[in-house]
Amino acid sequence: MGMNVACLDLEGVLVPEIWIAFSEESGIPELRRTTRDEPDYDKLMKWRLGILEEYGLGLKEIQETISKIDPLPGAKEFLDQLRDVTQTIIISDTFEQFAKPLMEKLGMPTIFCNTLEVAPDGKITGYKMRCEKSKLTTVKALQSCGFDTIATGDSFNDLAMIQASKAGFLFRSTEQIKADYPDLPAYEEYSDLLAAFKAAL
Image (cartoon, rainbow, N blue to C red; front, side, top):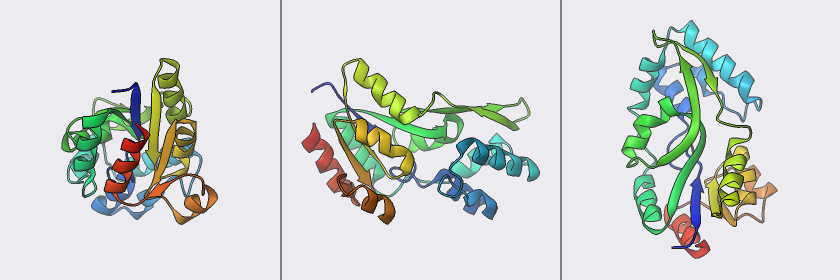
C-alpha cells in the first residue's frame, strides 16, 4: 500500500445534503438554503441558527431528525471497498454533532469537520471552524507529511481540494461545475468512482 490517502466530501457524495434533509423532515422550507444560495458561509450559518432559535429547535431535535437520514444508496458499500484498498478520510464542512449519527451508519470512518457550540440546555449558540479553507488546508497538511491525496467531491468548495491532489474527481456534481471544469473526470456511479480511485492508487 502506497502512502495514499483518499479524501472524500460527505454531503452529496456519501449522504444527502444534511440541511436540506433536515428542512424536509422538520417542515421548515427556509432551511433548504445552502452555500449555492448564500456563498458567505458565516452569514448562512448565523441565519440558520436564527431560524432554529425562532422555532425553538436545539441539538437534540436536530440529531433526532438526522438519525432518520440514511446514507445515499450504495455509499456504505463503496466506502467499505475503498477502505479495503487505501486509508480514507472524510473532509467536510459539517459539524461533528450532525455527522455522528451518519458516521455510525457508514461504519465509523474517520471524519475531519467542524464543531457546534452548544449551551447546557441544548441550544446551539455558535460554531467553530476547524481551520480556514478546511478542505484545501487539510489536503496540503497531509501532503506535507508525505501522503499523496486523491480527492472527490460535488461542489464548489471541493474544487481546491480536488485540484491540489495527485488525482481528483467530481462525483454527482452540477452541470455548471462539470462544464466549467472539463478537465476534471466526472462520475455518477459509485462503481465508476471506485475504479477511478483504484486506478489512481
